Amino acid sequence: MATNFPASLDSLTNPTSSDSLNSPSHSAQHANVNDAVEALQAKVGADSSAVTTSLDYKVAQLEGRNTAGLVHISRTAIGSAVSSITVSDAFSADYDVYKIIVTGGAASANGTFALKLGATASGYKYQQLYGTYSSTSGALGNGSSIHWAYAGAHLTVGLEANIDLDQPFLTTRSFYRCYAPFSTSAGWVGGYLDDATSYTAFTLTTSTGTVTGGNIDVYGYAKA
Image (tube, rainbow, N blue to C red; front, top):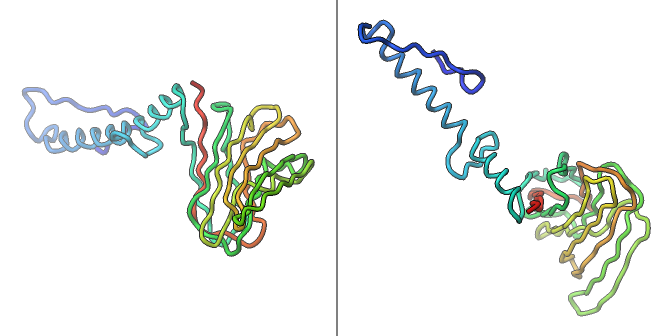
């Protein structure tokens, strides 16, 4: 018989000293045990397993939550020629502070990513301090925008964002901070969303053109 594990437990027949080799089948006994052992190995997982259903992976995730540091939550692959990417189930009660990192890929035109939480399209406040690569400095901001307009850069040579996000899941104001090298300048930007909503998802949108390839990784800051 094929093993039922892990969906249910197997009921294996043990031979007695008086049984012949073919009743019960000796080869079938070995095959059943082999199948069960392989199913157990798959369930437990190899050391440093990347299989999210394995016990090794789950234990590592739980251990990470009990120590200070970043815990990887999810990776979302960016599609082809898209102007917005939504990451669902990004935030939960497991963490209060998150990091969002965008790497790889390329854009059809140089521009900036905008960040929106859930479906909310108002109340985003931000201030940016920047410097151009020719050493000219400046500042800009918005007291009530439809999104955080500067949350990383999409360039023809690659995509880049490194965002810290505080309290998106809590029913209180959410704060964000980001540094990014844009096409002609680089700068720090930060602000908050003036509402008290619990969010689980976010969307990154291009300011112009589309992006292709790359990944969006979400991390949680473990509660030490």
